[in-house]
Image 1 (cartoon, rainbow, N blue to C red):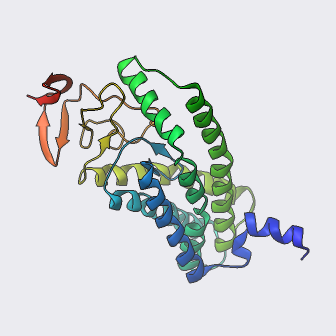
Image 2 (image 1 turned 45 degrees about the horizontal axis):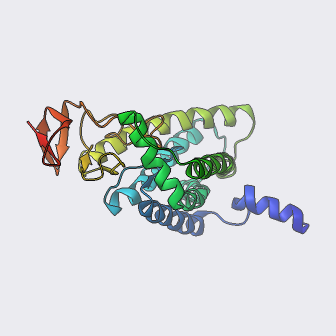
Length: 270
């Protein structure tokens, strides 16, 4: 194999060289490291293909997100492989290669660390929730560049996930592609449900915006939007912080929460 072809194989089909337990070990290490780096910038992998920033949480929650995403995708693909594959395959090979296929999430987590990206996320949060914020042009450019850079990384991860499925289960063609697409949709929904259950047992805190720097706003619990206010379209920008009917504050249920009610700079909960 010539060096150029070998480089392409390593990038898009590393499973030609590694599978089983070694792939599982490296993949899990990459997933956990991505969660650790994500915790530094409050970046969540809250879905099989999702990346959102903004909400702080305990370290264990960041680490568990990637594991949940991997397990959901791996289990669903294993079931699909059993249905369409004409040959026997090992679950270890499939789970190991699927774990390794998620290593680009580490690069994505690193991309969200620049201060400009973090500042713009908070500014955009303030703009969408209060309708009043000053957006910095430099931060906007950096934010847009990072979001654009994430797109090929996500596509790369999906390509690796498909290749891992194809190699491990020995399936190709239209049937394999159709099963893979169906698996992504099912695993995405399943991962959201699992993360929703996980968020019921933790406290997710929205970052203080420039307009409410002295007001910590907790959005974990039922009624806080997708996956406790953390998951959903546009979460990198923000989700609403006020008007929820049922929320958790430090693990204790409180009702009738309204962030607009303040007294001496503190939130009042009726």
